[in-house]
Length: 230
Image (cartoon, rainbow, N blue to C red; front, side, top):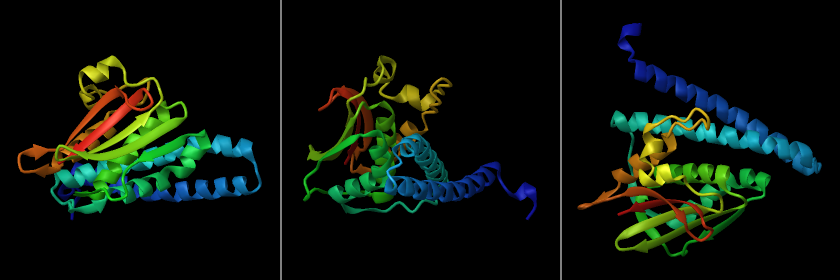
């Protein structure tokens, strides 16, 4: 195979995969150091590690989103729409983020019936929730709430925080401004919104289609990341 046989996107995807594996090794190493600090009550070092581990988790999530979008674009992603326990998916997502949330003293609340089941791709929807939690982590004061309910033939997933909420420019475009633009001051590329919106729209049931919206308010008066799946 010559270099001309390898497309640029395939090359980028392969590089992203390598970066993701290396980053996972670093994240595991940082978590081990954090556990050691916790064991010897080294609160100062633990507090300094918190933001670093959060950024590593965020970068890892971004790389997974890029790889998933690449595979979806190539129609090689094994989409698996199956019945899932919504409470279990939320619990697993929170477990993944628990240490990061503890570093910042964030209280996590869940409002989901144990008997709530719905059909969706577990990995992709977990990716949506991880993205929403990463956003909420950055903007919350100290509280995040995940709520799930079935209403009008849709599963509604909400991730709410008690921060300042989304700016008017994002609300007016329903998050599309974040999809299309790059904010050099905040470092936002809109990747998370694009990934979440794309995954939500992939979920269809007859004429109904999934969607992503953002709003302010909710139980804590801050930003609300809302996904509806048919």
